[in-house]
Image 1 (cartoon, helix red, strand yellow):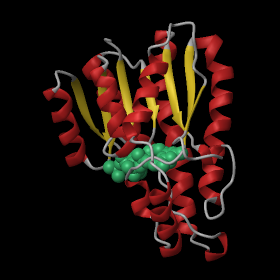
Image 2: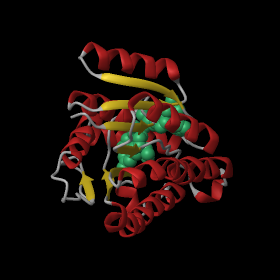
Image 3: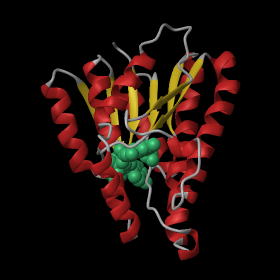
Length: 245
Ligand code: NJP
């Protein structure tokens, strides 16, 4: 309650659900993404429920856009207590198809975008001597799946960076770092798969098990954010019951 949060990739899926959950728990939420019309709808839903939200048009790949968004949020609400580095994409393909544009896009958004937002919020959190950074890794940040090689590489990078960040800013700056590793969540993520074979595979997977909803991840984020100040829930590994690994 009373905290200020920034959620990237808040226009759909896990990010949108997390923004709604954080707002319901009493946080003022900056909702960031490129599709502002979707963000406006989420802001309306938050305000209709009695919460407070600020729409922030942001491309996480562009450091200037990220810095401007963070400045806008601090200008409106005065601090940044929670960041959910959630923006990401997962176009599946085999390596020998050489879909290098998709590889670069994943590296740009999933890794560099997360580094951009982290860099933009750290000065404020250091000044406050408090903060909580949530980084969206994946079950694909713990092991490698065929067709997801580059995606897995980006999510392993997020997990590695989260560990390093925790070591460096935890004690020194009183900043908590939580690495989130979900299994299958029903979102728009799978809509961007251009390979028909893998698209079919994901559709089949959805018939074999009950996927998580974005809200399920939002709930775990609120749980970790509300832990007592001396507690860092360092990892959230959240799977559908039917998804072994
Ligand atoms: O997917 P989706 P999820 N700048 O497609 C945004 C991870 N994950 O909720 O800019 C700023 O509904 C995009 O916004 P827009 C996954 O890897 C998922 O599932 O308006 N934002 C949208 O809001 C990802 O890191 C599953 O297009 C950018 C959001 O990203 C995170 O969860 C499992 C952007 C994507 O929402 C959220 O994905 C898992 C940019 N350049 C991890 N590019 C799963 N769904 O099963 C994209 O382990 N966005």
